[in-house]
Amino acid sequence: MTNYFNKDLFIIRYEKPFFLITLLIVAIIQFTINDAMRSLPIILMAFLFIVISYVIFSWVYEKIKTIRELKNEKLNSELSLLRSQINPHFFFNTLNNLYGLAIEKSEETPKTILKLSEMMRYTIYDGKKDNVNLEKEISFLKNYIDLHTIRHHNKLDLKFEINNKQPNLKIAPLLLINLLENAFKHGAEKLEKDAFIHINIASHSNILNFVIENNFDDTETSKGIGLENLKRRLQLLYPNSHDFNTSKHSNIFRAELSLYLNQ
Image (tube, rainbow, N blue to C red; front, top):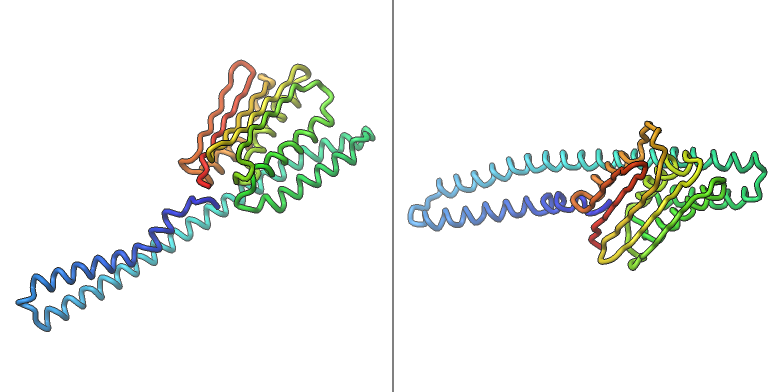
């Protein structure tokens, strides 16, 4: 996970000592003010007050801690579910392409199987990690593009510009594939001619910018889970540290994602 829960963890770790110190200071001030009047009953009452306060606070503290742990477990489970939704959808399309190559007895079939193997390795092993190097995510996107363009009979204007000044920058795995898959699914694979996909990835000063633009079949009305999946993952993984915008103009779709990474 990212530093999403760091604030809550800080509060859980230090709120009890802070409360006890506060009680001690209050007790010292009280005893100082009442020094002339101090007697055994007053001391016992003050001590009893501290003990009761501590017991009540400990009970409340444990309840709050339990609620937060359950909330974190729920969010982790939701993230796992979102990641599991990516793989079946992605591999369904990929296996369809591979099946087509096999039917055609294409010489590209072994090459495609090898690339599919590399992508499966990435999704199965690296996909479970909290973060991966940006270079690995970019390589995954390149393999995905290569696999699709191998069998893409229609001419496709595809541009992939990379200006990665921080190759070791880490991001959540399988975060960018939704947008690329969306561009192929609703654009290049539907259009009979003049299809294009233009991609730009740039990183600097711990900021990652990803822009993808493609034309699409404006008669299509179906909506996939890809964009909603991505939006929810961004909310969970990068709250208050990302910008994600999409726009449509005529038959051109554009998506812009910026991640502000504290690494």
